Length: 500
Image (cartoon, rainbow, N blue to C red; front, top):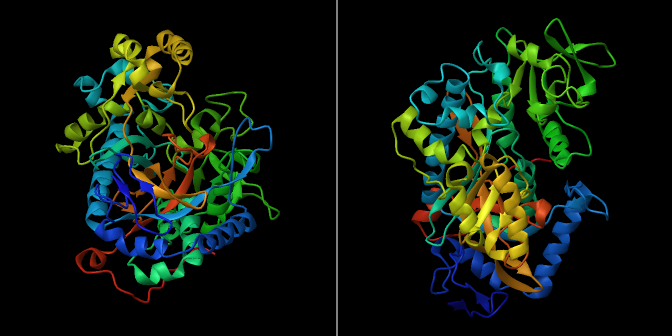
């Protein structure tokens, strides 16, 4: 059913999808009613002016991302849609509980498979699936993990299906990206729509940097009371370089490349104008393969020779730890509910999407490829993926050649009718598919999650691919405070700090 209210929402079509702002009958959901009224009362000229202010802010602050292979220039302003995604507090508490449960199980799994391997001995997960995973690091076997919490920063991607059920699409346990855009989106939204923040009880996200720094400092080797923390980047040509620089600036720490560091007697030092300075904690944004040319890829010019030995000697901490990639291998993903049951003796709070493994269901995947989304198990950014229902027979046949050649490296899932959220398109609001990536910070004692996350948007009409490298954008995610769900929304003077 369509929403036919006057204003910028005139003609808004739900198209049969679950909508984050509207009920099935086209009326605004109670928690979104105030925002709907405010936006719908604006003229096109007023909203265009807001967009111009947001675009100006993006350009002046250099908020960009990289599109590999783009012939017109790789640096692109990150597209932000100004209609917020609004999450009522009870929904958020359900999400939060599910994320905590999931990351606890993943960390226990990583400690186990690099240690005693109980879950493999008990045949809960096939041994060959883990030992054959591209990101399983046999170098860490034998001596135990040097870090009690392997995954310190996790970005778990959630989708909402046609019934409005939150489900986990995938876990990002290596070097999850996007949190800088979550923080910048909030700053932009507060500058562009200050009245909406006064009228709604939106929980802040600006303390993420403080929580991240607290977590990193807590990883310091034993006996180090004032650790030196650095952010290790592959360099300016990496797709997330803006984020690396942004986070280093906000944390007040050095942004370094591999060439800025060296190892001496299993200790890591940074080259400075005042001489070598020992580094205690590295927030690394380099994948395992490239982090130490003496251990994995000898041709890597990005890493630090000897870093792995310093890490194993516990003279430097890495966030995230090495070898965490086996936990976000898409072929391991279907087993996470079993991990939760095995390690925590609990049922999953957030369910998985139904998934078929290429190594177990190859014939089914080939036969039903036109109905499925088929993904390479260790690709990211929307690459290595076939959208069967939106692909030609030739495209499907070509893609299946790779699947047949290496079934273990592929999974398949039904095309989920992702929920949609209003986006501003050509002078009016239209529905676009979205997902949600909250960020979980993990220590031995607890998991901290700022309320919200990065809502990614498939800006192209009909597209289900939300990745920025594939034409996607993002939205600010508003989690409403409890009082906003228990009482009518009312005007309130509200101050939220921000990153400046």
